[in-house]
Image 1 (spheres, one colour):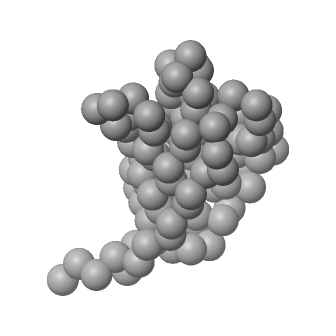
Image 2: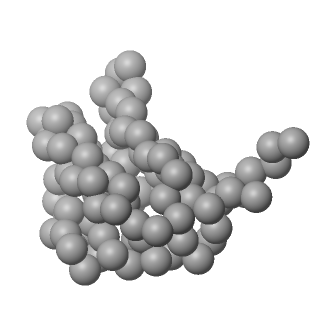
Length: 97
């Protein structure tokens, strides 16, 4: 069973592209972590949210990968004045047959 996440980020309109770049930086770190399966960066058609998705082999792989992100690029995961409201992060368990 794989472990995933969906995260909704709400940057101010003038920071959407910068925020997309920040999310890609996180993805670059994630790809080097053990247990990583995939990650993607999306933007809503209205441009009001950046949505990131990802999958890992286990919850432990997820936790380890994001610990690495915190060590390698802490400045890109900090909530700051460029965002309109707090991020919403939902974790998921695969139910594939």
